[in-house]
Length: 217
Length: 217
DNA sequence: TGCCAAATCACACAAAGATGCGATTGCGCG
DNA sequence: CGCGCAATCGCATCTTTGTGTGATTTGGCA
Image (cartoon, rainbow over the protein chains, first blue to last red):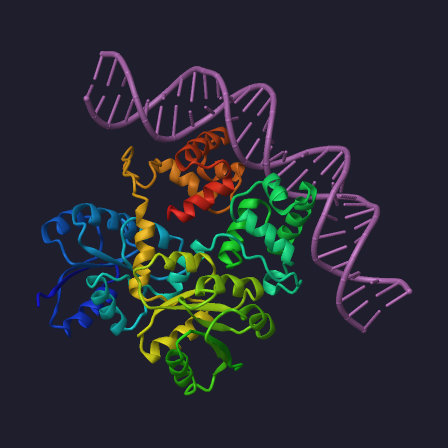
């Protein structure tokens, strides 16, 4: 069986060395190269056309997402597995849209990495479960509005305030929110006032950013 | 720690018994019941509100997808893991859209099932890699445009526009941005206008949300 | 060299949002 | 049974934002 030809792009030498060290134990995996940035990735992939690329998402210069797009344009058959620090990254979708096939989190054990490489070669998409959750949530756009109970803990926000906050998180205007929730625009104002107090925000933009950071939306 | 309360819906007695047999070995997993069809699922979930349901996708009477929708409407916090024979069906999307959180193939080993249950409880989405591939392919259906106006690539945004966008991404007002970048407020307006055109946004909130989704900030 | 695009600024007006100061209703809880 | 709080709504006022319609300068490049 032909060995799997792999390239690594990551700005951390530790990660690069770690990955190389792991893959060294597998005779059917051949590391073609490990690079600290993706600036010359076009030339490399068009020359080598690796089977799999392990791609860090944050690198100086060209980031992992742009790099993925470049890879796919020069060597469509190359499978890109993104390695990211966080799962709460909106970048998941962008990376997938730009052609990445797998999405792992740093800190997966060695076995997972190797398994992921075999999986992409076999035609699957190795996804960290928490990353996958982002994609799943994407499919479930419609809010399955639930508990009318006022014990929505999270930030002291009531259920209704959460409804409004979710609307803010979709970029809706006061008017749209009022229509959507079947209440008057003044009630929307009222809820938003309280949301601002509780989240210590001063504008819609701030409220959205805080809510996202705190995982409320 | 409270044990995880689980229900099983599958028309095959072998599968039901197999799953029960596996879960019996884990003291923190409690099987509330195992049923051969989902016809009475509404009453059951509204009464028991299980933490996790293992749901076969093909059952006589109500199928697993409809059943999932019912479950989520009566007990939104219940996590549904679909068990399917094949990964090559459309049903993946439908099931996810109707509220399923995990999607496994029959024939996963015992450890995977147990791990999947723990994963959904922890807030992740256990997905078989080949099922995940379907979802990934879905994201890649919408192809990407590569407009290269200025070298800042991403969305045709110029370097200065990116500066302004990053400020937006911090929740700053026009006035604050103007001060921060040492330009007049009208110049800020001007840049934001162009950002809105390029991102197809109509407000700060929308611009921020789009920019985050696309990985620009 | 002449055109273009980016960056800067200006003014005016309309729309949206933020805030201050209310009011009423209905529900749970001590 | 009264208290508090969530949810609803109203109005007034000011600030911020969005948009239409301009202008000037500068650097690149065909």
